[in-house]
Length: 257
Image (tube, rainbow, N blue to C red; front, side, top):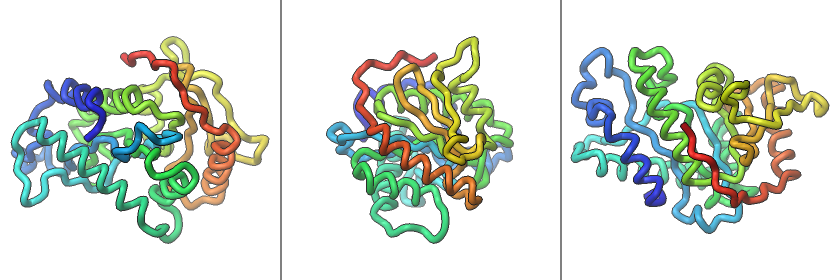
């Protein structure tokens, strides 16, 4: 279970949401066909005592089944409990496994867990649903998915209070991240932006900024990217995190709009 304050936020966000997005009752309809179950941020139950909290924001889950064959939809509260348990269990198992061959999202998560401990790792996603095992950006329901995803991700940041956020959703969905967290005036919530070309990192591969004036954030390509530049950016990111020492933030974050 997430902290009670986050669970209450989840409940508030999902109260007006069409239950057909959750209960699979209309997944035979073309507009709902191909949608995954709802993803909610996963984390250790020991997060509150972790020395450092590192949130990694991916793009979406390829496949995500909250309601397995032996599970039926009861109500939204029960669904929320199932969805959070699903992501927490998946994260725990993934971090305990050996490294995947080549490059992968969870290889980055494992690298971070080795450095900062598994208890402090938070798994989030830019989009709370996938579509046809990939990005939901081309589905007719995208505007709805985008709005729910934005509210959920902001609630996760506010209530889980990460010491650092790594946006690892890649460039294809960068414009959506910039809608969620504007980096240009007016309305910018990002400050102190920086690239790392002096480290030999191409400008589009690694970018840092402060979110809400408090949370150090980094943006990289999706960790599955195998290009030499993307791999160099990930190595530089780990180096930068060590030098920053991830000092915990105790200042309350502003409520996002």
